[in-house]
Image (tube, rainbow, N blue to C red; front, side):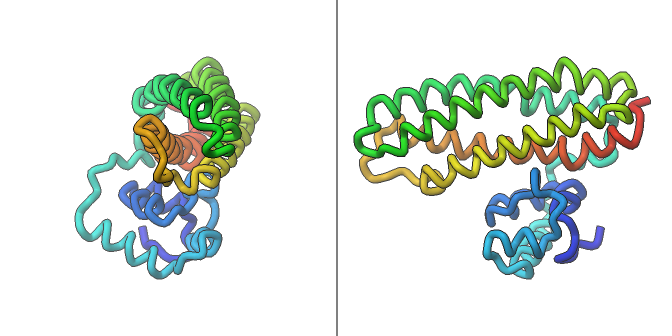
Length: 225
């Protein structure tokens, strides 16, 4: 794949998974905003597209391509990977972060009033993601497994809309936490919470990317058989 500044970032991430490390580094949205050309995605972050392009080429040239490329994988295998690598760990992490955000907001809200809003945002995101993954597991993924992906436009549209909503919540959480930077007075739990939220954001970006940019388009075009 010839990578240019007019190539959609979702295509770059799909064809060259190692490029997602560069996108993370520059804060470029390659999941919900995967249809945007690299130039436009970089402009949204006030980043020079040629700098990002050079970083991607360097990443690929260095042979750091240990990630699996899923663009031509069997759809059942891709779904299994999403369930194992993302759904199960996310459900577990949401429980852990729920306790941490609750504790930090309760103990330290007088030091930083934003912690109360952060807690509220997280509670909403947790509920949304839980319902979202359940719908995928019980409705959409079985449809795709049964070769009914071509008729799954309605459920897929709903899932993409919910991905956008989750992405917006993640952006608000990042802003509220000063890009996950702990203040000097932060205790160990506070710092661990921020680290966990940042890791959750990174994994959710990869999770949504696999669905929006690979699984859903392929399911709409082809049956699994």
